[in-house]
Length: 500
Image (cartoon, rainbow, N blue to C red):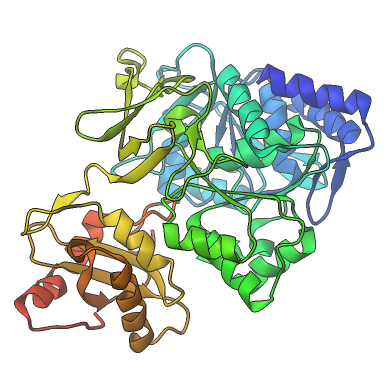
């Protein structure tokens, strides 16, 4: 992290009047960003492990940089976690200070009210001090603890080395060709590692401008809810040159450009990651003039393992591994990475969090002769049909959700003669529109991957109903359990498709 902090200080000295960060209320140039960071460091007052629970904004950037400059361990708290998960995280990380712009939320989660008020970058922040228990092991050299979304059980804290975070930042700048003229708009929570590094550290390292509006003004709420009209207006208003998007946001942007709600003018690099993006969606976006570059990563590898870049793209690939990342493919097709900078999971110092090289990602993939990486599904979800053909359902799901009529999809078919799908419709999509979309997808797929029959779900997969995790990722086992009887009806021949 020192490399990033020193670089920001250098910009403050060399180009003090250049805008560093901006939100709806505040615009901070590099001089005043540095001053706000220095002011907050005093308020941190010797804390060792600091949690940050706040919406996107200049205040988030100041707090995050102050924690890093102070040399404390930073622990971003995702706002989309439940109160129970937040309370678990605070105890698990043994935080001795929490910085927040949401005191009521913190009080509800922790049952405490004694907080110190502080004005930071045009916003009011509250500081909650805790007496640490001191029984949580943390690896030496940890600069940041980022929590996984907890697809099973409680989220786990991934301990990361600060120099590795800086190295990833620099290599992302190089991959994207970042310059001081860039304007990076954050449309994902800064509490997520990818957005933290790519949407804040990378532009500041380049001397550029980071646009950090509140997520609600961009139409984003929770982990997986989107108001497309606000989303399009935010892009039109902030005029970004770079974006980081998950596939669902890329789908929304492609639709917005197609409808004329916003233009692709000025955009020069859109990084897409966080979940698999179908080849169809990538193709649609590029046909609309969107400069889309796929990436692949995981928290244990400091967010980014591989990335497409200008002049180095292959259809269907996620680009070549970054220079510092070691990647190889196991005999069973699993992607193995070196995970430099991963120090172990919080609380598992004795076992180093079962850390080992090469690190098993759980993803299936391949490397071509030119070193491009292709991700082909999850190891634990791949299955064989009744005809013995192996299939990763993520591939089919990605093709389905690339269609406007389909918002979410879960595909099943282990040991079955055909694949069945649970479909969450797109906005105002009729059953006929969904049928047409599925037929169009099937026409592009080999016979063993096609969807034979489907169920129209009654509500989206979400954290509230237990069918998605805190990050918005669909919980396959939960969806199967929830719709088991209806899916069996499809195979019994009693149903073709039905709303359940």
